Amino acid sequence: MKTITLEVNGKKITKDIEDHTLLSGFVREQLNLTGTHIGCDTSQCGTCVVHVDGKSVKSCTLLVADIDGSKVTTIEGLAQNGELHPMQAAFKKHHGLQCGYCTPGMIMSSVDLLKNKKNPTDSEIREWLEGNICRCTGYQNIVAAVKEAAKNS
Figure 1: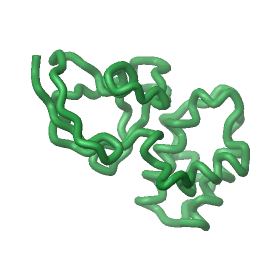
Figure 2 (figure 1 turned 135 degrees about the vertical axis):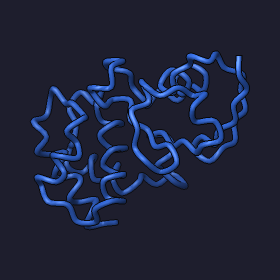
Figure 3 (figure 1 turned 120 degrees about the horizontal axis):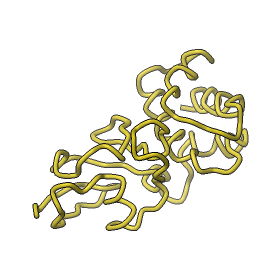
Figure 4 (figure 1 turned 60 degrees about the horizontal axis):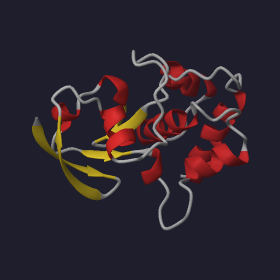
């Protein structure tokens, strides 16, 4: 067992965890933040993407013990004061989802993209989201949503 302290969605959390606890399971099972999905457990699908210290990471292959002291933002932490984050609003407006399973990871990855590239091209968006798999949409509405969010950021 190890005691860790994290800031999750702006709240300080101290918990005792098993050394092998993955971040994806920790946020879902111990913090009840179920917006972070688990799709493959092999870091291939991207449904589990969260931000750690401002960077998008696949939480299914990251040990909580390794990020002790970090700031974690999940999909639940993006909205502020009851207002959707611009990326969430753009996904809603452009229907950048169908079943919605990949959506939290897509949004978290896309938010990070816009931190790194203010006005990405379609191909840059598609390349950035290469590690996020959507089996429903064909990605066109996702790309449109990211472009919309880029205009409104």
